[in-house]
Image 1 (spheres, rainbow, N blue to C red):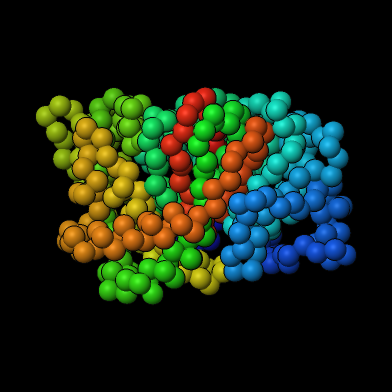
Image 2: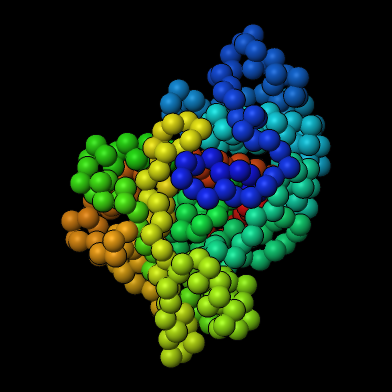
Length: 366
């Protein structure tokens, strides 16, 4: 779903059918008899705790909501979303992530998730710039990254390598994995704080941005987490159309003999201030590129350049590996339950994906 940009210095994300800026006022932690508890009761929900939940910046992460009535069905979630859109957005902007659990557990399907997405009234966001191959399964709903189950997808902000990014992400568990398969999350400001404290020189360089280098196949490669074809990525049927799109994005390119396409982005932000919270966030796909942009066409060691075009040195790659380890140790990784819906503020929270034992089917709306 697309809303106005929430990050300073980032291009606006387009128009939306909800005034998010006004909805994003602070919401205090729920307590017995507190105003927010009364609001929850009026909205027919309650805040529950899950074992994996943590506290960041004095807030529960993720905030987890469940219906008051145990008989609430999957179709009721869409109705609840339509009636409580403003509250949901406000809670999301306060906590960074909201988990909706207990609506029709065991029976919820893709159509139920699609109804929720549509009832929230947020604009659909184009998938073109996303590196991941996806399949449209219902209005406003796609498969999450279709990379093989054995592949771990590292932490990233969705489409941080693009000029325009979705402000909110929504994930739906249609079928939980037999083992593994969590979608770990972490507040991005915690990562930025760690980077400055442990690797200040690298942080200074990243403040000047990064460039992303990627080779796109001529035809989509479902065996790769970054296997989207250049035709799909640029909405093009010819090389001329793709070149026009890349020129508009200030992307440089090279056509390879086999029909694949090597691209180098313009300099993109890596550390920015979240205009709403005032906190600096690690807003990029650097870790994902260095640890996950690997297939028969791409070498992750060559996926990132500094903003001036210079390559990362071994010490800098090692420092980023240390940041990735901090993220692994600090993350929140809850086990999916059938019917769960996770909503993420893409301006404030990074996400990843664990490897898993099938079956698992997580759907997404951007």
